[in-house]
Length: 245
Image (cartoon, rainbow, N blue to C red; front, side, top):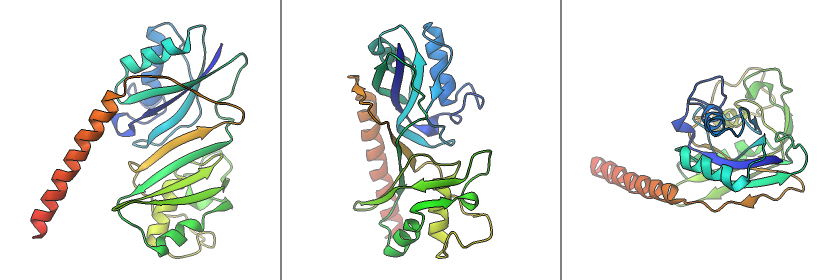
């Protein structure tokens, strides 16, 4: 059986994503658990996020004879700061990198103005992102299909839609847009502004003709974490108000 597993993780709790980075990388931790239970010694990942970047809907592939529910139960029961929530089972191999769309979210901790929105919107479409990525062997020409802005009381979420992105591309876009009103594709230098990784989330990966099955698991850890961090954020907001008085 060929299995795709969709999962999320708090990127700040791991030493990067790639297994070569550390025993505490996202890939290494998953592989170690799957190997311990004699399920597999290797996974194929759909996306490799930067260090401290989180995910809600990354995907990996394995070949196995075990039931998907058993595998997701093992992973959720043995790995902290990750959650494995959906799967797709196939009779034939599926390359997890051949997706139709990736969705990333970047959280800006304030309501942004029209100037910043316009600066970010300039990156929409197909462009050569040589000056807005960490150069490697991949072609830097990429297409951003859509950019959306979600506005809340005291923060903004920027949604990027595209089939593929190059290393540091989205953080470079946000950093440049915050610091410059220039036309990004007229500059002759490499962008020196790189936004912080922690607010970036790989929200979802979408495939043509594939519908993932939701796995029912105990999400008490996520709810408890949310509640504790929410209270902590309120406490520090009170601290700031007391200092500003």
